[in-house]
Length: 133
View 1 (cartoon, rainbow, N blue to C red):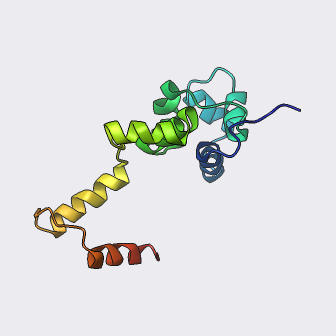
View 2 (tube, rainbow, N blue to C red):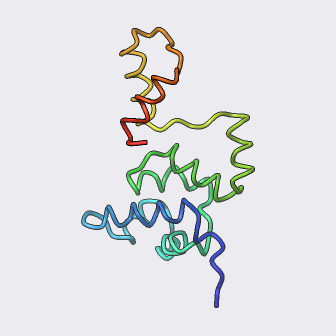
């Protein structure tokens, strides 16, 4: 039986979910073609965790999956390097922001009058309340 060392990675789970979400609009073969994979089986191998997503494939696959490239890069780094090394990359270079996260930051700046507000216990609680935490 072949091993699937990346089957429990967040990237494998995310790609599986995105393909399911796009199911009515795109086939897996179309996604593979749009991502530049010569063999559509590569998508199945990424989903199952039999292979990692090569970092140089992130931009094309993110377009094919209609997802944010920064988010997919974060997952690919974690899968490729492991959580500890991916954290080191994050600590050194910072985390790439997704388009959605940038929108949140822009809204925060607008709502605060661009005053660089501190994250207090009260504001943290209000923010987390939005997400039911």
